[in-house]
Length: 203
Image 1 (tube, rainbow, N blue to C red):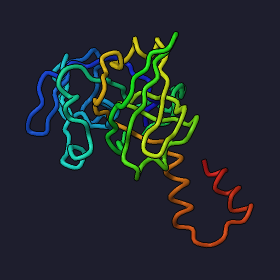
Image 2 (image 1 turned 120 degrees about the horizontal axis):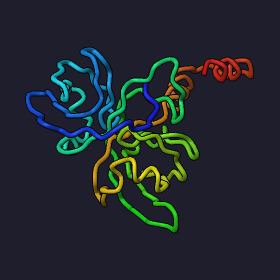
Image 3 (image 1 turned 135 degrees about the vertical axis):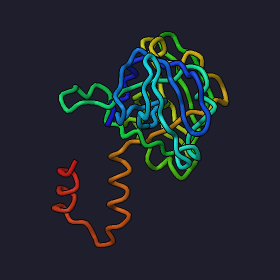
């Protein structure tokens, strides 16, 4: 599990044969889980100040791999004692989003991101979403896109400052939205108030 708060930028040293080598201050252990641009990956080798993670074929099919060339977002897996200051993130990327609009306002930046219509049902107004591993709040949801607002602090501490139109990004939708949708989709019987209470309290 992760929180969507980026701990540092990693520098990609090499990426070939499914192995991604990253230089960073973070000192993981072999077997540790670490989110790289939001994707939960396993550390397979360490040669400080670098460590290696392996990206499987399943992950390759769903990640914006072109963003694993220079700098990347890094977040180690959270500990049970950690504060959850962002939102609960699994590191399981749902799909790739495409930046369709960037509008700077007086003290923030509005970004509209298009995703496959299949996943828009998991995006909730005023709910949470992770963009390249960064925990953000959804402002508006449209038929095939959504709008987020990024404050200057987040811009400064992420790679968002370099993002441009048509850039592809890794998207993880809200975990609870996915779970609730799955429960309702497969529960064919009519729901009672006790059923709704049971579902609510399970989260």
